[in-house]
Image 1 (cartoon, rainbow, N blue to C red):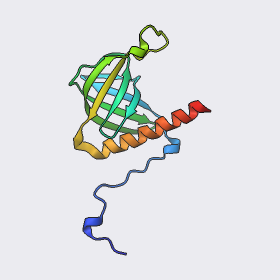
Image 2 (image 1 turned 60 degrees about the horizontal axis):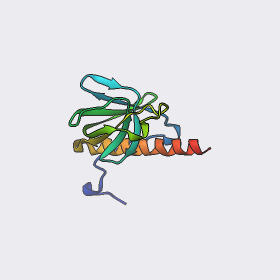
Image 3 (image 1 turned 90 degrees about the vertical axis):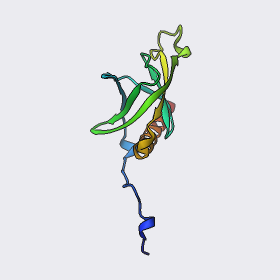
Image 4 (image 1 turned 120 degrees about the horizontal axis):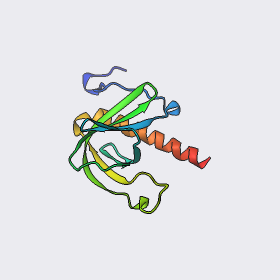
Length: 131
């Protein structure tokens, strides 16, 4: 079976060994870097984060997934930031701010890879907690 030019893949495939993936997230903006970032929810268009500090609306950011020597970064902008009401009066809950990030639409390939890798990590963490 032959493949014509219109049927060929436009972007190359990136193989990710999900079973071996364990990582952390980093948020960079305005010459700052936050190392303790929690992804609360994710889609291919953006993410909800939990942070220790607020980040201003309209701030350009880069969110990076670091897993061993593998890194994947997505660019975006903060579209909302608010106090985490779950943390009020709860000294054991350190993440005091919820932040909504809209990913840059110009790099759909990285956005989808970031989404898939993060979903895999979130699923693994949920499974690990249930054990």
